[in-house]
Length: 464
Image (spheres, rainbow, N blue to C red):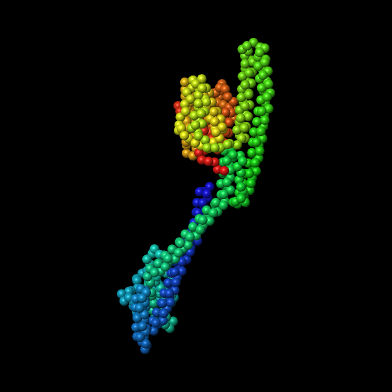
C-alpha cells in the first residue's frame, strides 16, 4: 500500500512546490529587471539635467556639452551601456560610443517616440535568462516646457540574467530541500498511518494459516485504524470461541458415539451368529457400521489436530520420508504398487515429527488407494525456496481442475471414486496437522495422469 500511497503524496507535494516556485521565480526575474530599469531611469534623469542647457548660446553651454560627453564615455567604458542625447531629428548632441545611432525600428525607436511626447518610456518587456535582449530606457530633456531632446540608454542584460539565474538556482535548491524534507515526512506519515494496516495484514495471514491466537496491538496509527484493530481483535476472539466450541462438539460427539456404536457392532456380530453364514443384509450392516466407526475416528483425529499445538523442532525430512515409505511398502506390495523413495537424503525443516508423519501417512494412503496395480507411487523429499517439501506423485486417474479446487474439503470425495473406501477426512486432517506448524499442502495434476501432492514445512526457525 505504501508504494501506491507514496507516489500520490509525492505528486501532490511536487505540485504544491511548483505552484509556489513558478510565481516566485517570475517575481525574482521581474524584481531584478525592475531594479535595473530604476537605475537606468536615474541615470537618464542625471544625463537629462546635464543636457538641459548644453549646446545653446549661453555662457557655459560648451562646458556643459564637454562634461556630458565625458560622462557618457565614462558610462559606456565602465558599465558597457550605450547612452546618448538626441534631438528630434535624430542628431546627437552627445553619445557614446561614437558609432552608435538610434535604430530605425524596434524598442529603441518606440522609447524615443514616447519620450518626445514628454513622458518617460514604458518599462521594457521582461527579459528572461534564456533570451539575449537589451533594455532601452528613454527620458525627455525639457526646457521652458518643451521637449528639446531625448536621453536614451541601451543596456546589455547579461549580468541581470546571470543574477536572475542565481536567484532561480537558490529557489530550486530551496524547493529541493523542501522536497527532501517533505519526502521524509511522507515516509514517516505513511509508516505511521500504515502500521496498523501492516499489523492487521500479518494477523489476518496468521489466522488464515490456522494460528488463531494471533492478535493486533492497537498502539499506533490514526484513531480510526486503532478502532479497526480493536474490532478485529474482538472478531478474532469470537471466531476462535466459535471454532473452539465446534471442535469441542465434534470431539465430544465422536467420543460419545463410539461406545454406543461399539455396542451396536457387538450385537450385530452376535446376531450374525444366529443367521445363516453369508447373509447379505448382515454383511451390509456390518460394513456400514465399520465405515461409521472410521468416520468417528477421523472426526476425533481432525478435532484433535485442529486443537493441539504443534511441537516444532528441527526435523530430518529425508529420514522421516524414508521411514514412512518403509512402513507403507508392505501394503503397497500387497496391492501390486511400487512405492519408491526419491530426492535428497539430507533435508531438514521445522516441523512436528508426529504431525508430519501423520499427514504423510494420510497422503500415501490416499495415493495407494487410487493407484492401479502395476503402477508406481513416488515420494520425493527436497527443498523449494524457504521450505522443505515432500512430494507424493501417483499414477491414478487424477482429478479435474474443478475437483482440484475442492480436494481437501471435509467429507468431499469425487463422484468418480465413491466406491473406494474412505471418509473424505484424511486430507483435511493432513492440512490441519501441517497448518498448526506453519506448513501447507498443495495439489496439482501429474501428467500424463495422476495426482501430485506437495507437503511443505518451513526451513527457518519460527518467530517466537
